[in-house]
Amino acid sequence: MIIVPVERLTEGMVLAKDVTTTSATDYRTLLMRGTFLTADMISMLRKKGIKSVNIIGDKQAVITAEPTPAHAPAVVAEDPIPTEHTPQKELTKEEIKNQHIGHALLELNSIFEVNHEIKELSKSTVEKITSIADDILVDIGNDSTYLGNQMIALQNYDDYTYKHCLRVAMLSTSVAHELGLAKEDIKEVIVSALLHDIGKSSIDHDIIIKPSKLTDKEFEEIKRHPYIGYNILKNSGDGVFSSNVMSGVLFHQEKYDGSGYPTGIKGKDIPLIARIISVCDVFDALTSNRPYRKPWSVAEAEEYILGSCGTHFDYDVTSAFMRAFNPYPVGTMVNLSDGRHAIVIKTNQTVLRPVVRIQGQNSGEEIDLSTDFRFLSVMITGVYGGDYPKYSE
Image (cartoon, rainbow, N blue to C red; front, top):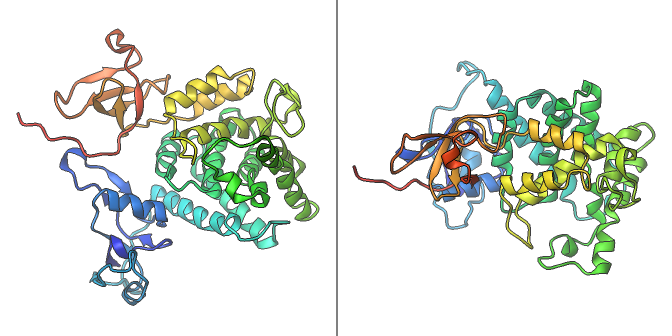
């Protein structure tokens, strides 16, 4: 194990110890031991003022790595490096889950972020997708707390397609569980969600990231991606992907009232797997950064989804989504619409209105946003990301 300055961290390094905040008034774990670092995680550590972290690995490998930025000092403090005789602390289930997420990001990056049009998926790529699906199936299950924490961690400023697909797969897993699907059916949901936007590999990237409104011609180009994705899976070989998985990719942009694309089918004619992915796809798109707009709050996105039930989304799937996804698990720091900050101390059936404890000035006050009539107009506007101000007594 070695101590590495944040300036010298690179993607793929693995944390040897938890990383926590430096603020005594906002002490919490930012990243857990066993996490595979991504560029977004490294950027977050810089913004939080973290100077160095403990990394599993070899000292020389870090010293010779190209620093980021280039002028970063080549100083690496050394901890004893484990040998075959050094007792290894067994990873907790939470740490293993974080390893799986980091591994999934690296693998999906290698699949999606290519410099050529994807025609089919190789056997090794299919094996990677299957392995990721197996990990998600085991890790998430019905654990809405883990899902909420990971969804918060995976929201980022550089929102590439592969990260979006991973989040949609995670959300879809919990919705499928909530609907009572069999294990083998849930795995198909995960695989389809991981690949639902694979067709965008053939769309001009400038259109995908365009910061202004698309022209009619550009939108017609975007509308091709479900068909392209379907053909990629079909071309990958007979029996590699089930018809159910391929239908999720093909129909995920359909709407319940028939106004979607590419075929305009509606209602229960849309396969269930596509109806599940559709809700999760839209929710993640709304709450993520996009070149053309800032992210919506979770509350705004869920209100939109509820308002679109019966037109865009299936009622049963929407209900399952609202039950499955707890965006504010216990321990989450949040912003309130009255300008205060609070920590969630208990969840309610109405997940958008938990019990919170006020932080900062007048800290300690506990409010049940679901039942306290004095605060019915107060809502959570998002996850708090800054340092709490210090108040004198």
